[in-house]
Image 1 (tube, rainbow over the protein chains, first blue to last red):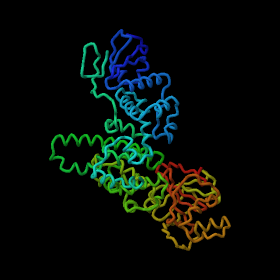
Image 2 (spheres, rainbow over the protein chains, first blue to last red):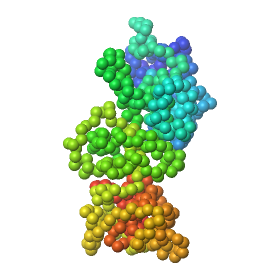
Image 3 (cartoon, one colour):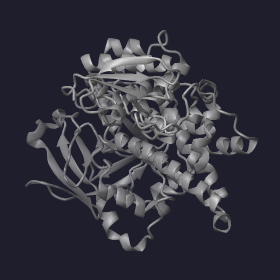
Image 4 (cartoon, rainbow over the protein chains, first blue to last red):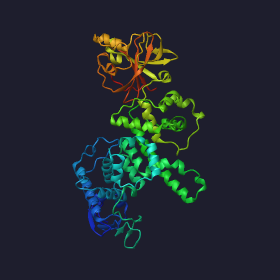
Length: 169
Length: 362
């Protein structure tokens, strides 16, 4: 068996692309950490059939960087009113910036982080989504999250219970 | 080689069983409940409520009452659906409980403890379940957007009159057996949160609170106060104020409710202020309208008031024949303040936790 942390993990995406990272970097993932290894194998290959290559590439990029620079824990309540105030590490700010990651990719990353059990990535993407929602009115949130319209009955109930939201819109 | 695909197990693969559903384009509604819980744990109350407004996942609470009607007569599938709803509801409860914990954390008499949570659950039916939901939510928004929230609602009157003030330990221990324990599913942290917002915005001190709370007392520098050296505990009981330490006689007190236009024949706080400033402005008669007068540092014995508080323009406490003590409430701790130019009373919990630092209290 390879020395602990020195082995290589190869992740194969749903569309067949392979991404390589060290065991040490892969340790951040609960799924990968707990996955069985063949003794004497220096290279372990794991199929990640739920994650496509564009997303898996970003996930691996995150894991590699996290191995070099740990992400600070995100406090609750949040210690700032903007994303960059809360997340003050430039690399992580940039990693999920609007320029680098569109909304679809963000949700894919969020799901992938959950699937792979990568808590820091899950926190980072959740925080990003949170700030995308923050301060938006109900209709903007519906559009942002592509939520289905409520039925007239549901709308009436929501209006009854949350009248102030309708007033502010 | 290992795989996360359970559909094609192969001996040469290390099998990791996970449901297979390729993540191509995830939308909010596809996310499992645990994930939106993760996202919304960072959200502010206002954003959380907006989500409830637009997302069916959150509206189960609204629907539950109707849809659960006659659930026992319905089939197993209906029961499963109901179980799923209960799980989602539980998740929502967790979010609101977290908000309660954070919101009350810096308020010694409100900070959530196991004992207080138990009190809330036991008294939920009698105090919280009838909260005017729309009004309370509106109050929260008003504060968030800077709108005035001073208007009293019907429910606030009810609570002021009948509800045991949370979390007075005496109340909790005095009648635990008389209240039926509501079911967990009925208990709502969200309603409790908004009830507490309304409660914390209340600026009318009840007689019960005056007499059941413990108080600190101090003189302002103008009246010879020397910080902690002159800080004393005191209690209001049965119409008599007892101040700790030797040399203070018990003093009678009574609560006054003032109305615009009232001209109480009493040496008012405003009169003291006007005298101190040698002002010829008309501040001597209307004790109910001049907020700036209350905030004037000179009025407060030369001490700048940095801790924000809500003033009650219509209530005062008369102690013996001293100038009126006006009632206000501290934003940060939720504690009560009674002040005139010479003295300050600050409410505290039984343990005597004192966070107030203005008016010579440091």
